[in-house]
Image (cartoon, rainbow, N blue to C red; front, side, top):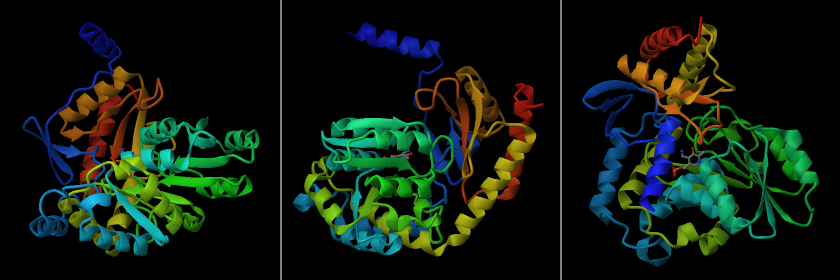
Length: 389
Ligand code: PMP
C-alpha cells in the first residue's frame, strides 16, 4: 500500500502539484521564512489584528482566569462564561436573533449543511464555493446541484426542475476566496424567495472588511435580513480563530441539538474566546482599517490591470494574477520570493485546471509606499516572464 501512496505523490510531483510545509514566523505584514524577512501577500489577517496588543492581552487574561483548555464539549462542561459574552456581542454586531460560536469555519459549514439538509433535501451550491461547503453537502446526503459560478440563469433552471415540496438550500461564499469576486447576493435573495429556498452565506472573507461596521457583504449589499443563515470566521479579518453561525433563534437551538461537529468536539480554549471578544469590539470601532484596506486594494488591482495582468473578476482585497499553467505560477511565486515578497501560487485542485494563479491578499497594516514598492517588483517579474508587455 505504501508504494501506491508513493506513486500518488510522484504523480503530484510530475504535475507540479505536490505540496510541502514550510516553517514561518509572521509579524504583521512581514513574515520570516528560512531566515528571510519577506513582505507577506498571503495572509488572511486582513485587518492586521492577529498581533494587536488588545487581543493578545484579552487572550492572556482569559487563560489566567479560565485555564488553558476548555476541558469538555460545550454541552458538557466546556461552556465557559466567555462564550455567552462573545455570542451576545456577536448578536449585537450582526443584528440577528441568535448566534453560535463553533470551532472553525470548516466545521461550521460541514455542521450547518449536514444538520439542515438530509436525504430528501436539495443543496444548490456555487461551483466555486469553499471546500468545507462541498464536504458539508456530501456529508448531508442531500442531492447536490452545483450551479456554474455566479450564474443565476443556471441556478434558476436547476431550481425550476426541483420538486417544490423538497427542502432547498442555496449556499454561497459572499467573497470567493481564490478570485476575490462577490456573489450576486441581491439576485440570490430574489431567487430564494421565488422558489422557497433557504439562503446560506459564508462570510469568511467579508466579515470585518465589508459593511458599515464590518458586519459582512450581505450587510454591505443591504440584504442581511433576507439571509437565513449567516456564517463567518474569526480566523481571518478578526485575527483570531474559530467561527460562528447567526440566524433565527429556532435555527440556532436546532443546531445546538443536531450539529455533530458542534456536539462532539471540545469547546474552544478560553484564550481564543478572549481574543474573539476583543476583536469583535475593535472591528466595529476601527472603520479606518476597512477604509484603508479597500482603498489600497483598489489601487493595487488598478495598477496590475493597467500593467496588463489578468486579475479575473476581483473587486475586493483578494486579487489574483491568473497565469494558467502550474509551473508558471510556481516560477512567478519563486521570483517574487527572490525579491523579498511572499505571494503563494494556487494550483488545482484548489482552482480549476489551467487557471493556476498567484493570490495576493492585502492587509490594512500595509502602507501605500510598501504596496507601490511591491507593485514595481511584481511588474518587473511579469515582464521578465513575458506575462505583460
Ligand atoms: N469558508 C471559506 C470561504 C474559507 O475560505 C475558509 C478558510 N480558508 C473556511 C470557510 C474555513 O474556515 P476556517 O479556516 O476557520 O476553518
